[in-house]
Amino acid sequence: MSNSQEYRYTQTHEWARLEHNGEVTIGITEHAQDLLGDIIFIELPEPEEIFSIGETCGVVESVKAASDLYAPLTGEVVAVNETLNTAPEKINEDPLGAGWIFRIQLINPTEWDELLNASAYATLIAED
Image (cartoon, rainbow, N blue to C red; front, side, top):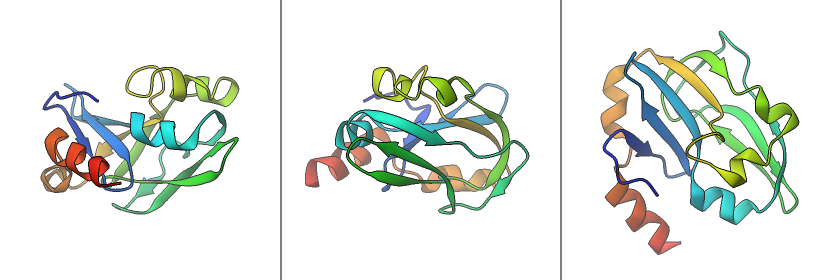
């Protein structure tokens, strides 16, 4: 898990990384992909869709289970990782890098402070 201050986390195991241009890149955490096992399919959100914090915005399917993907922040989808359509295993291989899922333009930037920092997320997963 990254200890960088640029990453924040949700209780549902999504990560969010604030980019220099103000967009936020979103994916699932290393912990989540470990629990899911080999990822075989991902349903990506559509560009220009707007999601509210906590709203279902996709599905991650593995050999073990299917899990909803929740929007960690309110925003408009500005990019999706199309590579995942043919190579969903990128999430297992590099969940914080090449396995990113989508990017949003924040609508309510104050929500960023409501996400868990690395220390709080580490405590959460230690309790799992």
